[in-house]
Amino acid sequence: MSDHPCPTLTLVHLAELQLSAASAVVCQGDELWIVADDALVLQRYSLTGEYAGKIALLPGELPADAAERKAHKPDFEALAHLPDGSLLALGSGSTAKRRRGCLLQGEAVRIIDLSPLYQELQQHFVELNLEGAVVFGEDLLLAQRGNGAAGENAVVLLDLPQALADLAAGQLSAAALRRIVPLALGDLDGVPLGLTDLAVDPHGRLYCSAAAEASGSTYLDGDCAGSVLARFDKDLHLVWRARLAPLAKIEGLAFQADGRLLLVADADDPQRLAPLFALDDLHRS
Image (cartoon, rainbow, N blue to C red; front, side):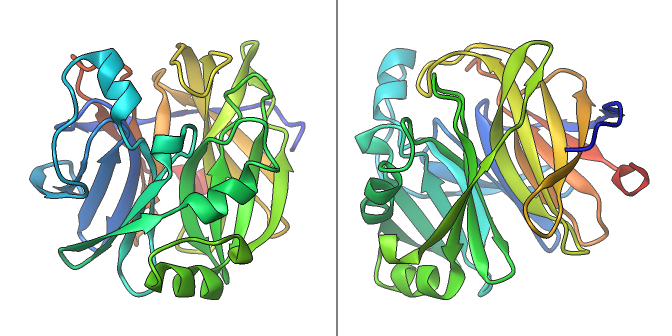
């Protein structure tokens, strides 16, 4: 990554969302789709954060008790917009119960078995914890968040045609795995950074978010020291990084067609609503 001083970018607060644990966002035309890691639904908003409805991804309800909810949630941490317009929500894989995905085509939802791919990825990571996904060229990229004791941040590259064929069969398979690119993200004020999402801007440039969370576990939350935004070159080397203000655990990124970046954060508190932010001056960074 560049040795130049790390600038600070100030986010514009757009709205409070109708959920607390926002984990991923996708911009689709003039709509936003947002998923939370402790919910069973996908919520729809306007580009300015006005709530417009929801679609159930899985049936039933999660327990109200925080500890029981954490144990039973599917942990949807990633959301990708696929070439045919469908949306793919992915569980993190950090526990055996978190290996389901949901493919949304129109308003039809199909449950996806992620176990074949995740079992293979478990051979590569001490603690699997996938928290982002985006289509980038002929690949479907997954973001491995290194917020466990091993600190393994990485970008997982899946062959997009194979992944789409797998999804048509109701799964993601190890056959789609092309390669894994480890990332050295460093720290923020002494707290290690963990990769939280990936996004591609209208010019085809790949960005990521990372949060500095003081926890040695992929399961338990910790105090957040802040978040950064970073950009890759075409070879997946990190070439630029900026600190984000105000302090928030940024977990989701999405670009509008005009290049405006939208970001969501996890409040890590069920009594607090998650914020929706915007960043308008990224092209001047």
